[in-house]
Image (cartoon, rainbow, N blue to C red; front, side, top):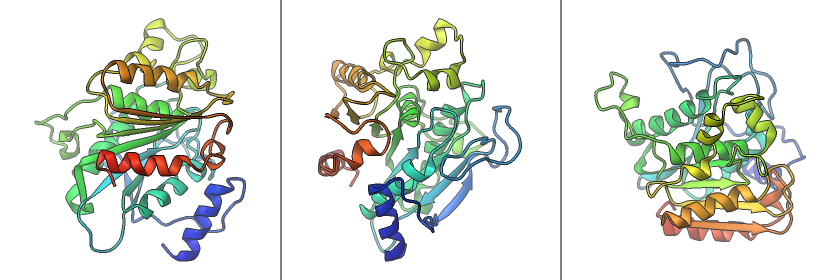
Length: 300
């Protein structure tokens, strides 16, 4: 990317209300399911919106690779938020990709399908994204054993879903991508939706994912604090006490379960910052802690 473009993206990250004239150009744009997805979310027609994209029926990956001679790098699949109603690529996708690229880490934005009454669809897309990165690891000069996920808000729920429910791949699949593991090697969750239970749930995300009157089994299934195991990947969480959209208890509950299961975990809680990019823009000290964590995980 040019210096001008890099500066523009950093400005957007620090001042999310400012629009930039030019968006970063990915190294590649891939159809997540080139032969057609095995399921549908029932949506048709063109996508809607640019900053936050809705009506997504054909999920895509925007791939950003570090340039120059280098050893195989780690990679991060980014799942922006949007309450499972849109995918906010401008505020929680592009600037995050830029931040990772500056650290020599490959960044892959997953523009996943919204559920629209089909709760399995978003997680199927996110798992497919992780498999796709591993399938292309040699081509993209990525270490297939250092592939993580970074989710925001409802995208944080999606990231925690694939961090708690995953598989090692189907060894006999005719689809070579499906032979790859869907387990993230590390997980980053910023102001994530975690629970579907009353008291701390983000009601909009719950409604969009599992419906207005979900069965108790679905509430349990997608309350990811209950799905943590010893195999859940090391996790870095960030949240603000004054978050009125997604209460901080979401991160606290997940963190407690990580600790109980012996999973390496770091949790940053700031007094103020509310919800969305202001949570990290107003609290710049998070970045040094994040860099130390990446180094400790071998991701940087």
